[in-house]
Length: 152
Image (cartoon, rainbow, N blue to C red; front, side):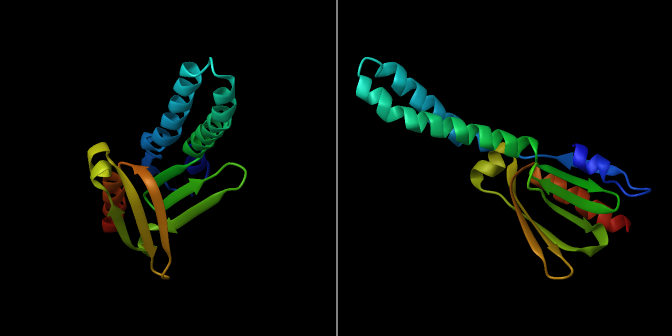
């Protein structure tokens, strides 16, 4: 979590850090696996290899994209701010002081409850609302934001 640690203010310390949940890898890897199996099973039929190969390449590119999204996204709570960073080359970041957070909402599907991931919606006092999907341990993140808000 280099971005968060590199952008701490004087007297600021990290209370909690998390990242995206591994569930984001399921769809691209299932498609990749399915294409790979079809290529192996239909290897005798030359035309089928040519028909399936573009789907295999697409799923491989999708898996690589998801991997980079996973490693370049950071979520953190400090004793002063909530920090969220997405992206490597094109970077999107949200840094909001704890006392400016007017609300934090967690949305979880049944699958999200079972595997402990969900969407966080952070509302700021200026009326801003930011959505962040597929966060690992969203309830713990919310708890740490609320705890830090109580301390300020």
